[in-house]
Amino acid sequence: MRYMMTYDLMETVRNTNQWLGASARSLASYPMFAMAPNPVFSWMAAWGEVTERTYQRMIVKPDWGIRTFTCEDGKDHLVEIETVVERPFGDLIHFRVNGRKTQPRKVLLVAPMSGHYATLLRSTVKSLLVNCEVYITDWHNARDIPVSDGKFDIEDYTLYLVDFMRALGPDTHVVAVCQPAPLTLAATAYLAEQDPEAQPSSLTLIGGPVDPDATPTDVTDFGRRVTMGQLEETMIQRVGFKYKGVGRKVYPGLLQLASFMSMNSDRHSQAFVDQIQRVMRNEASDHDAHNRFYDEYLAVMDMPAEFYLSTVERVFKNREIARNEFVVAGHKVDMSKITNVAVKTVEGANDDISAPGQCVAALDLCTGLPDSKKASHVEPGAGHYGIFAGRSWRDNIRPLVIDFMNANSKGGAARKAANTNAA
Image (cartoon, rainbow, N blue to C red; front, top):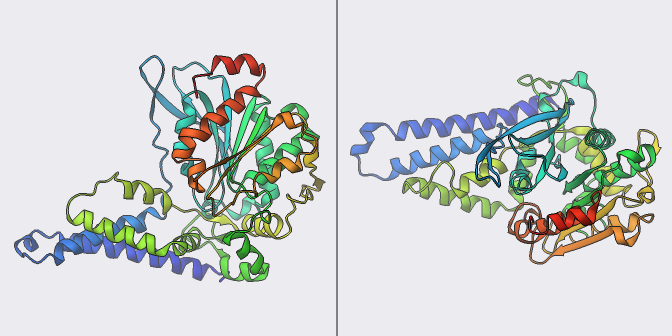
């Protein structure tokens, strides 16, 4: 499957289905058919509308949709997204609220590079904007990155995080969500050895596979069963001529999406059947619950092949992070060198992707860190998504994270008292 022909075939299928949906919608909406009482035309138009939107969203990067923010002065302030550090595979961006004084907490959100865009953390960003200066890693779609820009594996990812932390300075609170948790821990340890003055004030790891074997799941079992040769042969393709990254080896977003959907195929199928019925009854809207969720869920990005393969091999199979044997640019990273960066882990009791036990393993690796700077939390009843974007995050986890940041800021005690009610 490592050929452009396979990549282009998938894009052709997607494009054809989008065209079929648009054609069905246009044909069934022809005014003359309104005279016929047969409901088949209403169903056909509804099917076309849902199908066209579904397949069109697969190649569109969602917008952040954060345009204004209401501050304590009661006024709506414009939110400007500015690039702080620009790199080929990802940028560091800042959500600057115009006209608002600088907030006491500088937060770096490390978004996962796992098939979806950083906009998956949109609600997380909104909740932190209330009283934080929010920065986030905005990873690029590999199909749009020319081959001349070189490779990008987990070592490169880690070094990107190191540079982002250096750019923001030591008064930063880092929050890593899901997949980047182990690599963010490694980046912090790398800084502890190479540039101690640039270490962040605190590090919060949310639902990440620091030690995948601590609590096995379907994800970890898959990583154990499949060989690297099988993964490369079945998952890796070359970008076709349509995009700037022509010839680059990637794990295509469309292939990832097929895997996502197959895990809960019955639920997804029923969701689309229900949406077609709602469109027929004129009960659907452009921003209803179905479209809000699937506009984001279906928007997938290609992942650099070397990043995907090195993640599976080194994080899941060889457990280099869990065994404290991770090497970055020829330097062996030692987690025990983290001695003054407060570390907190957050897990969901019902997380079936990164089960409880996988993330809290980070605290055992930080042998040089005093217990007073370690914290952990397991959220009862919460799944993977809920611990960073759902009700559990809003009601319980976010206040705990904010308190943790306050307690471990420069001049922590005074700052914590000043923000007691802010969370």
